[in-house]
Length: 282
Image 1 (cartoon, rainbow, N blue to C red):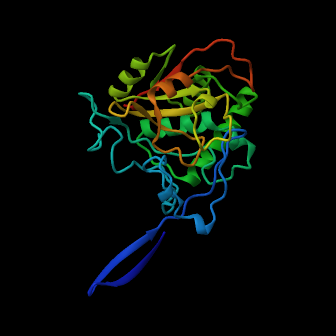
Image 2: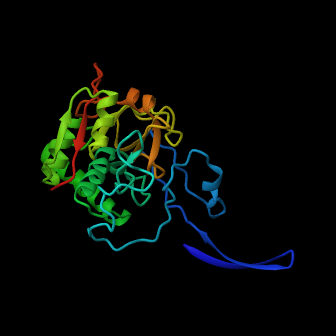
Image 3: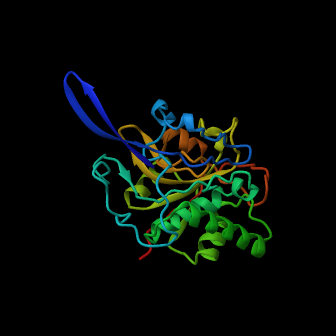
């Protein structure tokens, strides 16, 4: 991040101000899902021309030390614009990572790491731990190696297997439940209770403009909030570097929710809207 000081003479007045340029992070791509082209220097102000860019998704923040220290603000502390009841928005402070945190989207392991990245975000939130790209990439690759060694594959894991293999097996985290065939209102209730959801979905039905058309048939993301006025769910979607606080219309997201079997590109004969409900660790 570079700061420039400018002096402008206009109408006989001098104005002094500071302009901060954000350098977006490198691109992230999910195999046959995301279209994330490298950002050229001349395009670094592109964010101001995008109307659908979710808040908080400027991705050029300075690097932090690679350590799992508690975040200054507890994830259970509501933000000013996000009270949790009486028809007002709810939003949990969940740290974000894309599935290719440092932009190495050529790595096929990271192209298929939406389950690993979603689980990582959920556990870090539940334990009030911070997350940055360098540690996130190492964690994701360590999870992939753990799955390959212990289960023979890391590709396409169902909600139940994601919870058992990654949450319980890798992280030794058990403060979750598997909710079968969730309703739209059931998802909202869990959010208002202070929980978040790791949810499998049909990425082709999400309509995310940052996915390469038609999108992934098997995708996983984290539902972190709800805005009743806009009738939108707020997510941390690891399938794009622009996925922090990414909003989907409630009917769009709910319509896309769909669990899938464990194993690469297995047929999905039935639609079950299962999800992992994650609660803060006591």
